[in-house]
Image (tube, rainbow, N blue to C red; front, side, top):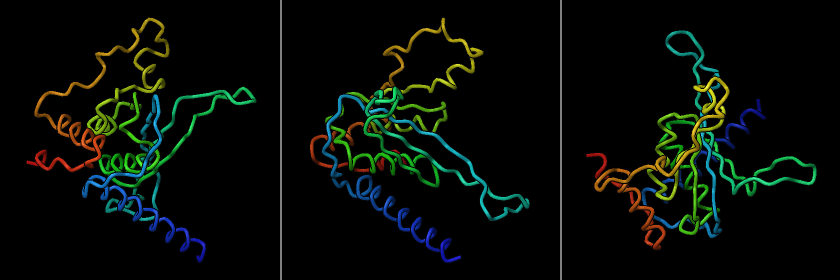
Length: 201
């Protein structure tokens, strides 16, 4: 049981650090330390449900949502001919989608300077919570992952039109996305990020 207690303690410390990092960026408007520029950064989000140890009111074991986030600068081929992700970073959180996105972006902002990231794609399975990442990244476009893209096509998408610029999220004036865009633009100008509290009204 000592090992189990150590793992739980380590997980609790990591969770507290991730939450503190998110609050620093999104609540207090602090500038993250990321300084790495990039021509393009690809983000991928997914949710994995695992069974917990506790049982709910219905007698079934609870299901815990692990929110996965992956960031990388494109793909390359190694000496063995395998495809690898360049400068890969991974973040995993337990909890609600929007909070997990903020935690992931705050963690990745410790690596990359988003003001110097020229292009960004957000990939996922089409879940609404993943698309919320576009509200924080005005330069980003959405990309449905190949597996879920092929499902409506019956596995053959050879005749499907390629994604165009029309897939980019619009930013109507006064929308929540537009407000988050201004927040991240303030980050680019060195004035930090402040939560758009007006969106709660």
